[in-house]
Length: 243
Image (cartoon, rainbow, N blue to C red; front, side, top):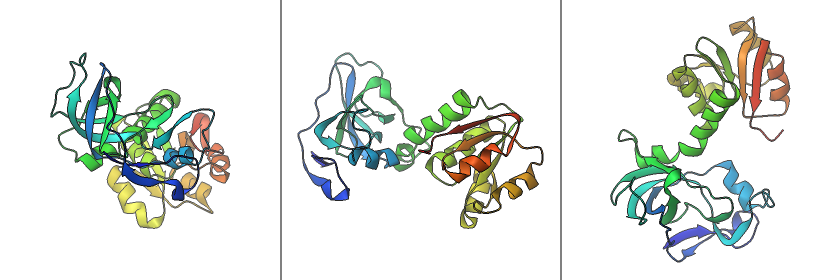
């Protein structure tokens, strides 16, 4: 099969496009013909070795965890899917080996779901990692409730755009930071956009004088410090940024 891979850690120059053996599946996995795969920040962090020691690499590594595609062959113990089923998944192992930037990927059944019919393969492939991150932060960490107000940073980004929609689905009011050119996009997701940068605190306070109930930070640094001062009493803050 054709695949993108790297045989050592490094920058983009270590990536190679070429032939690799087709993946073999176990009894509880399926072989998926990849139709689309998403690129996430963790992919370049893995490639550059930032996660070495946390996720061991078995070279050559095929990057990519997000995938959408069609089941080609189910394992002998698989009853959930049959050949021809359209699926979407977060195909992550406990080590770096054969990911989704290839024509085929071996995916454990537990990592897959049926692709929604109203989504294209490209749209579906963009959901798993960003969607799981948004869900874990909003529902598990922040425990966002109906009627609360949440501030989502980088609301036009991958994780942020999913977070805005999920928070609205949960019944929350959403204020989202974004550049002015992305304000209409954030509004279309159901959020109230504010310009990030100098004066952010004043702009948010202008919308919510009493402070926000929760902050979902995807930026870190000074933004994280400003966010802490925008919380209402007993407000909650969660960050996925490096610092």
